Length: 466
Image 1 (cartoon, helix red, strand yellow):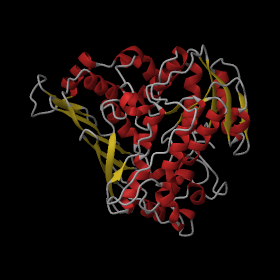
Image 2: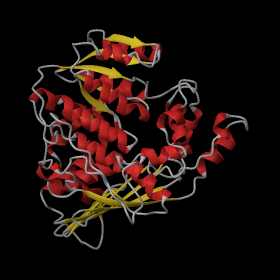
Image 3: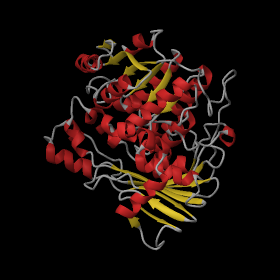
């Protein structure tokens, strides 16, 4: 249940996620071959309501429960405990030491000791039964995100889940149906949308500085083979197994795609995702790393790491705009969340940060370093102006984690719609199963599912928040 570990005997992983053999077809249900492709959209259950612009009743204090307090979850608990109007009431984790460590961290901040639940995979259900919890933060292995978010909403709590929201199209529908039926938020916490650079790019897009937006590029390029050294406890103990999925697609698409999708207002009035194609390189790096670091009879050497080392998707939107998405967590390379937005009047990009904008220097050359900093002077996002300094002190990926968590608390206390709705989390997460299906079919186009059931056209685009 912790975000950083599961013992190998806890459950049969491949059986759980159903991603081998016939299981892959089930995981990507809703897509036939591209020549006869039909995407079915189930009817909204009776009594359920569309959640695109949903605003929950105001909460004077947001009382939190936390599920999973390993590396990621412990940081979430520590920060949420320090945000005004936010309180950690209870913590659940499979491991006693992690639960107790997180509880002690809250107490050291001068806050009341949270109740602790640990020792079994289903202990979090006891926590969810508490009436004094308003919202739950979920930082657990990927396959547990959907069932835990669903359980939280069924128990009357708002659910805030780490990325991805779910791993299959079927589970994404279950999350959406539960949110619509219970009237509870379910937000996938895409923290990269709150980074300083991405926030400024959003501001540039909203102020139409780049003209009509035509194209975006989004990537998550982060060498993480060393996580394989975490065999029994740690992120690698559960995450490594995903790389054994044949034609696994882009396992982690949302860090790059989330910001670009919001720049373009995809799934909100203006435009939405239409189709994608995906191609992957051979999978080599994980096998080589396992052979170099572990004995021949080690469980990592009993796996065949068949997911491509680098995958590339090309997405077409309904308006005809294009997005290139890439993912690589295996090969040695500099870290990059390559982030590019191109319009008729200019282009901005990250890693490294640079710009070419009409009226802002030579449009045939990049403005970088000191010249780029002048963009911040004029177009710094209001959220970063207001919270940037404290966010940098609080930490969490340069401050973006703190801004995201503060905005969640702010929206819940003010009774405002969240910056990311449940449908956006589903759309961005669905790139994983759709890219897998495309790779299985030799790069055949795959249609996106309309999780909004047509209501994206009435959903207000995200403004210049803050």
